[in-house]
Image (cartoon, rainbow over the protein chains, first blue to last red):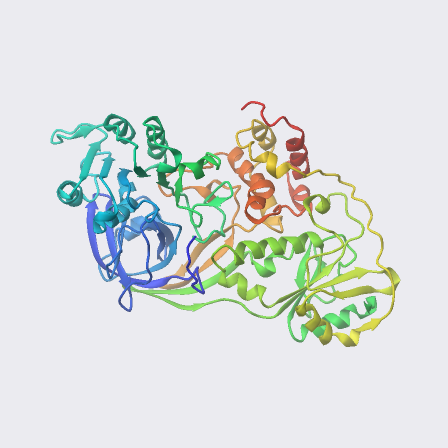
Length: 277
Length: 339
């Protein structure tokens, strides 16, 4: 649960966009800081913020902030708000409120080997945890990243994926795309199948998965097949959200609200809840 | 004990209205509900004797639409000029136990679990609730089965109708004491007795239902029970405890405001995601979510049912869905069938 004690949790701060980076044809990263300078608030890896333009608000997982003077949000163009966000330019003011949600089990994962599994824009939330591990390299064991997208063009954070992360100590990065492409020499196929093919050893590992719901469902099955225990299987979920503070109702899975009690759940917790996500 | 004579009610309301907005149960035209005690409304019939009114007092603490803050956009600039927390003093007069319980559930939703909703809090902190104890439950009433004591509305003051002797006036909280002092001139001391509560016409057995539902998410019963439902959402709007809301914006050119408004889990748009997904794509899933929220999920989270047994949804449903039938069906069905 967030420890935010803000007096008006539904009223946003005003932030300014200081940089925009095109990650893929339909994903852009927005770098924001408070309109008065500095950070609007601290957000932990896996926590989310409600970003807004007059047209509407949307919940986005923070892609990176730790130790920086800005927050980064990598956002895919899919609907009304994100369509408008993709039109804005540097200098635009936005509404931002948060931080929301529980975040990744950073402390509980210390000393463990990390397995990150992501599909498409699902790498955006995981990236905050991945970069946290690299920043605190000695706290974590071997790091394995398995990432896939529809096509080469749709792979996010290519520079990190192909140049930076594979060169980190004790790190493996495995990338796949859904369908063959002429220039692509890497693996072709869906992420869950690739996970099973790579068959990472569950011993001493924590797995963290994010992607489209259907990918998450299959990836969790793959991990169970490989012998991962429920508490070693962590995922972060998303649903439509409006308030972000567990009041407006819509993001419930059973009695739990993704915005407040999640978005990060392990399989032990998910098994207590209805399969409705 | 303190007594409010029945012919003093209007004067008492008049006195309170000098300090606060007063809401009273009234019939106006085709409808009935809690209306402000204003010059225009004073001549309308007060419904203190009626079992309950059509519209609950929910909207006084949680308005159907509520302006939250003003927005201005100029070029790349965006500003929030003003927020609209409303802390006017208000008194709600004549709230039945079912509706008072619903206010408690709104309190739990909006004021607990990590975040206090500032818009709700501003209203809540400045409201005094005067309950009206029930002694003769109506045909659709089943509050007792849902854990509500009909004679003990959770309020600052409780009125008990002692017939010709007037209303017994019982202050229950400090806020109630404060109001009692302010209206002392209309209260007199006299010993009388509240009536005996009559028994319920609708018998419902909710005991163990929340626990039983834990294993019934995939039960075939949901499809059968949801069949008549047309997902119109009337039950959610009339419900005194349904608290779901949407956040929307109204802009005229560069300026406007963000507001929230009641929403309904009966609608596909409620949970439809920007990317095209929807975890509750059909009416059956939405129906199931609503009744599980009322009968299981809320009690898992807050310790009591979100249904207060007021019976309004049964009255408004155009398709004849009765939550009492649903509770009965769950109670009787073999929870392992079809799983």
